[in-house]
Image (cartoon, rainbow, N blue to C red; front, side, top):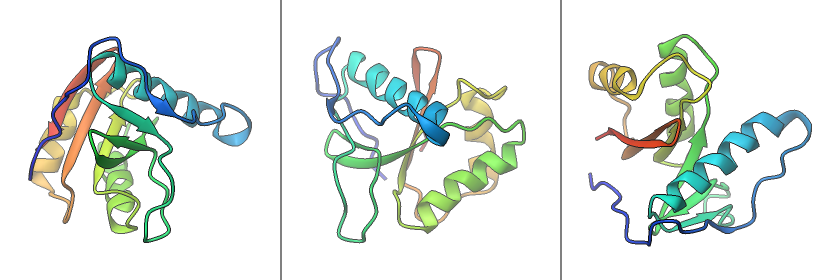
Length: 139
């Protein structure tokens, strides 16, 4: 597994279309847009909503040339957060996840610990966001 390294300039801007912050997905899309902005500001090259993959899935981001999907859990059950990550990987949505923990009581180390105890097959990477901090959660 290879971690995604940042190659852009600090204070960069995410490219691509923002997800619309309205309707039933308003809060989810707000967190997705927020994560894209934070990653770009810190120096990652981010394309938001890069388009459909050959498998018919639409990941939320292309970051440094790799596809990621965003998960912004509100659950206070760490096993439910792990299941959310697992569903995205199993369904083929993405094998790399941006985990926005701003609505969760958990910190990135909690997620690292549960993924160490209960690995997810085919999961390549999890980048965590808490506040404006970016933390490599997995590997």
